Image 1 (cartoon, helix red, strand yellow):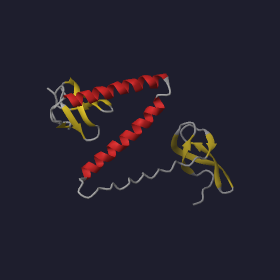
Image 2 (cartoon, helix red, strand yellow):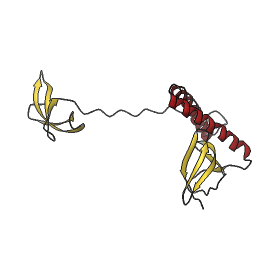
Image 3 (spheres, one colour):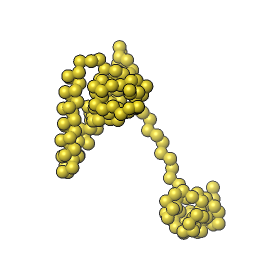
Image 4 (cartoon, one colour):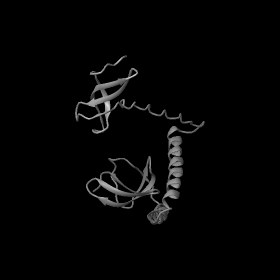
Length: 173
Protein backbone atom coordinates (compact mmCIF):
# COMPACT_ATOMS: atom_id res chain seq x y z
CA UNK A 1 0.00 0.00 0.00
CA UNK A 2 1.66 3.23 -1.11
CA UNK A 3 1.74 6.29 1.07
CA UNK A 4 2.12 9.90 -0.13
CA UNK A 5 3.24 13.08 1.64
CA UNK A 6 0.36 14.82 3.43
CA UNK A 7 -1.37 11.53 4.22
CA UNK A 8 -2.38 10.78 7.81
CA UNK A 9 -1.25 7.60 9.64
CA UNK A 10 -0.50 6.19 13.07
CA UNK A 11 3.07 6.44 14.37
CA UNK A 12 4.99 6.43 17.65
CA UNK A 13 5.74 10.02 18.66
CA UNK A 14 9.18 10.58 20.21
CA UNK A 15 8.00 13.59 22.22
CA UNK A 16 4.56 12.36 23.34
CA UNK A 17 5.82 8.80 23.92
CA UNK A 18 2.57 7.41 22.54
CA UNK A 19 1.05 6.11 19.32
CA UNK A 20 -0.78 9.05 17.75
CA UNK A 21 -1.95 10.42 14.42
CA UNK A 22 0.84 11.84 12.25
CA UNK A 23 1.07 13.52 8.85
CA UNK A 24 3.71 12.29 6.39
CA UNK A 25 6.20 15.13 5.74
CA UNK A 26 8.76 13.45 3.49
CA UNK A 27 9.46 10.16 1.75
CA UNK A 28 12.72 8.62 0.60
CA UNK A 29 12.79 5.84 -2.03
CA UNK A 30 9.11 5.04 -1.45
CA UNK A 31 9.62 4.71 2.33
CA UNK A 32 8.28 7.15 4.90
CA UNK A 33 11.19 9.26 6.20
CA UNK A 34 9.72 12.06 8.36
CA UNK A 35 6.34 12.61 10.00
CA UNK A 36 4.71 15.44 11.97
CA UNK A 37 2.75 14.68 15.13
CA UNK A 38 -0.80 16.04 15.06
CA UNK A 39 -0.82 16.38 18.87
CA UNK A 40 2.44 18.19 19.66
CA UNK A 41 3.61 19.33 16.21
CA UNK A 42 7.09 17.77 16.44
CA UNK A 43 8.71 16.52 13.24
CA UNK A 44 10.71 13.31 13.59
CA UNK A 45 11.63 10.04 11.89
CA UNK A 46 8.79 7.64 11.21
CA UNK A 47 8.49 4.96 13.86
CA UNK A 48 5.77 2.44 13.01
CA UNK A 49 3.47 1.40 15.85
CA UNK A 50 4.93 -1.53 17.78
CA UNK A 51 3.60 -4.88 16.70
CA UNK A 52 1.76 -6.76 19.42
CA UNK A 53 3.76 -9.73 20.62
CA UNK A 54 2.15 -13.10 20.30
CA UNK A 55 1.55 -14.59 23.73
CA UNK A 56 3.75 -17.55 24.50
CA UNK A 57 1.98 -20.83 24.18
CA UNK A 58 2.07 -22.70 27.46
CA UNK A 59 3.68 -26.08 27.23
CA UNK A 60 1.33 -28.97 27.65
CA UNK A 61 1.43 -30.29 31.18
CA UNK A 62 2.13 -33.98 31.29
CA UNK A 63 0.06 -35.91 33.77
CA UNK A 64 1.41 -39.31 34.73
CA UNK A 65 -0.82 -42.36 34.73
CA UNK A 66 -2.74 -42.62 37.98
CA UNK A 67 -2.01 -38.99 38.90
CA UNK A 68 -4.54 -36.19 39.22
CA UNK A 69 -4.08 -33.09 37.06
CA UNK A 70 -4.25 -30.84 40.13
CA UNK A 71 -1.30 -32.76 41.67
CA UNK A 72 0.74 -32.24 38.50
CA UNK A 73 -0.04 -28.50 38.55
CA UNK A 74 0.97 -28.20 42.22
CA UNK A 75 4.21 -30.06 41.48
CA UNK A 76 5.02 -27.74 38.57
CA UNK A 77 4.28 -24.61 40.64
CA UNK A 78 6.46 -25.89 43.48
CA UNK A 79 9.28 -26.75 41.08
CA UNK A 80 9.27 -23.31 39.39
CA UNK A 81 9.05 -21.43 42.71
CA UNK A 82 12.06 -23.36 44.08
CA UNK A 83 14.27 -22.65 41.07
CA UNK A 84 13.32 -18.99 40.69
CA UNK A 85 13.68 -18.21 44.40
CA UNK A 86 17.13 -19.79 44.63
CA UNK A 87 18.37 -17.92 41.55
CA UNK A 88 16.99 -14.63 42.88
CA UNK A 89 18.52 -15.31 46.29
CA UNK A 90 21.99 -15.82 44.77
CA UNK A 91 21.74 -12.51 42.90
CA UNK A 92 20.41 -10.64 45.95
CA UNK A 93 23.25 -11.71 48.28
CA UNK A 94 25.87 -9.78 46.31
CA UNK A 95 24.89 -6.44 47.94
CA UNK A 96 24.72 -5.47 51.62
CA UNK A 97 20.95 -5.02 51.38
CA UNK A 98 20.76 -8.39 49.64
CA UNK A 99 22.64 -10.05 52.49
CA UNK A 100 20.26 -8.51 55.03
CA UNK A 101 17.19 -9.60 53.06
CA UNK A 102 18.66 -13.10 52.62
CA UNK A 103 19.12 -13.29 56.40
CA UNK A 104 15.52 -12.12 56.93
CA UNK A 105 14.27 -14.66 54.38
CA UNK A 106 16.20 -17.42 56.13
CA UNK A 107 14.70 -16.40 59.49
CA UNK A 108 11.21 -16.43 57.97
CA UNK A 109 11.92 -19.86 56.47
CA UNK A 110 12.92 -21.24 59.89
CA UNK A 111 9.90 -19.60 61.53
CA UNK A 112 7.63 -21.19 58.88
CA UNK A 113 9.15 -24.64 59.44
CA UNK A 114 8.66 -24.37 63.22
CA UNK A 115 5.09 -23.09 62.82
CA UNK A 116 4.00 -25.89 60.48
CA UNK A 117 5.79 -28.61 62.46
CA UNK A 118 4.42 -27.49 65.84
CA UNK A 119 0.78 -27.18 64.70
CA UNK A 120 -0.84 -30.65 64.54
CA UNK A 121 -4.18 -29.33 63.22
CA UNK A 122 -5.36 -30.26 59.75
CA UNK A 123 -4.99 -27.41 57.26
CA UNK A 124 -8.00 -25.48 56.01
CA UNK A 125 -8.27 -25.10 52.23
CA UNK A 126 -7.87 -21.38 51.50
CA UNK A 127 -10.60 -19.38 49.81
CA UNK A 128 -11.54 -15.73 50.13
CA UNK A 129 -14.83 -16.77 51.73
CA UNK A 130 -13.37 -19.19 54.31
CA UNK A 131 -13.31 -18.10 57.94
CA UNK A 132 -9.76 -17.99 59.35
CA UNK A 133 -8.48 -17.50 62.89
CA UNK A 134 -5.09 -16.86 64.44
CA UNK A 135 -2.73 -19.92 64.26
CA UNK A 136 -4.92 -21.71 61.66
CA UNK A 137 -3.01 -23.87 59.18
CA UNK A 138 -3.97 -22.94 55.62
CA UNK A 139 -3.43 -24.86 52.38
CA UNK A 140 -3.21 -22.31 49.54
CA UNK A 141 -3.34 -23.54 45.91
CA UNK A 142 -0.36 -21.37 44.86
CA UNK A 143 1.67 -20.61 47.99
CA UNK A 144 1.24 -24.02 49.63
CA UNK A 145 1.05 -24.63 53.39
CA UNK A 146 0.96 -21.61 55.68
CA UNK A 147 -0.08 -20.44 59.13
CA UNK A 148 -2.19 -17.39 60.06
CA UNK A 149 0.03 -15.05 62.09
CA UNK A 150 -2.13 -11.92 62.20
CA UNK A 151 -5.84 -11.13 61.75
CA UNK A 152 -7.19 -7.78 60.54
CA UNK A 153 -10.99 -7.82 60.84
CA UNK A 154 -13.24 -7.72 58.91
CA UNK A 155 -11.54 -9.30 55.89
CA UNK A 156 -7.73 -9.66 55.94
CA UNK A 157 -5.11 -11.96 57.43
CA UNK A 158 -1.34 -12.24 57.27
CA UNK A 159 -0.25 -15.79 56.52
CA UNK A 160 3.32 -17.06 56.88
CA UNK A 161 4.15 -19.24 53.88
CA UNK A 162 7.45 -20.88 53.00
CA UNK A 163 8.34 -18.00 50.68
CA UNK A 164 7.30 -15.25 53.12
CA UNK A 165 4.35 -13.43 54.64
CA UNK A 166 1.36 -12.75 52.40
CA UNK A 167 -1.65 -10.55 53.19
CA UNK A 168 -4.75 -12.29 51.93
CA UNK A 169 -8.47 -11.70 52.00
CA UNK A 170 -10.81 -13.86 54.07
CA UNK A 171 -13.76 -13.78 56.45
CA UNK A 172 -12.51 -13.07 59.96
CA UNK A 173 -14.35 -12.38 63.15
